[in-house]
Image (cartoon, rainbow, N blue to C red; front, side, top):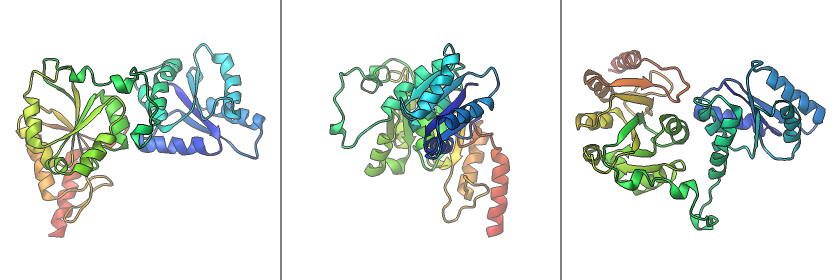
Length: 326
C-alpha cells in the first residue's frame, strides 16, 4: 500500500486527515505533518522523516501538501528528490483530492499513478454558487462531457453495482466513497416520499459527485425502469433506499437485487437502537426477514473499510429490546 503524508502550515493536515476518515473510514499508512509557528525548517524536515519511518521500507510515498513553494513543500521536495523515480508530490490539498486518493489506493499500487489520478478530483471539487459565476469552460471538461455514454440510448438493461439502505440517502460517504468503490455512473434514490418533495430532490441532485447523475424516482417507476432493455446499456446504478420497507417493495416488484448494503437507519419514535447507526421497529425487522427469505444477502457497514456486521445478530438484539418495551 502506498503511504500518504499530509503536510501543511499549521493544523490543516491533522484536520483534513480527521475529515477524510469520517468519510472513508480509518486508514492505514496515513500520517499528518504540521508545521507550527514556533518551528523552523529543520524541525519540519525531521517531522517528515519521522512520518516516513512509520511506513515499511519498501513503501512508495505520496505527499499531499497544502501549498506549492511553501516550507512543507520545500522540505518534502528535498526528500522526494532521492526517490523521484517512484514517489510523488501533489499540492493544493483539499478533501475531494484526499478521498479520491484513499479510493485509488484500493486498486493502484504506485504513488505516481495515484498522483496523476487525483489531480482532476481536486480541481473538480472547487465549485461556486450561484452557478453563473462559474468561469466558462471550453466544453471539454469531464463534467461537461460526463454521462454521454449513459445517455446514449445504448440497448440493454442497467447494471446494479450497489444497493444501499441509508436514512440519510445521498451524503458525503455515499457521494465519494461508495460511488467510487462501486464504479457507479448513476445514483438513483428510490422513494415515493422523496419523489414528492421538490426541495429534497433538488438537494440530492446537487449532492451528486462530479461525473455522476443523481435522480429521485418513485418505487413503481424504478420497477418499470428495471424492465427497460432498450435505453440503459452502460448504466451502472447505485440505488439508495431510506428504509428496508422501500427496498422490499422494490425487490418484490422485480428489480433484480442480490445484495443490499445496510449503512444507517435513523432513530425515531417507536424504534430501538441496538448499535450506534441502526435503529429498528418491528416493520423494519419483518422487511429484512422477508428479503432474507427471498435470497437477498446483506452487507452491514457504513464505509467500505469497515468490518462487516452480522444483520441477524443485530436484529435479534433489536427484537429483544422491542419485547422489553412491551
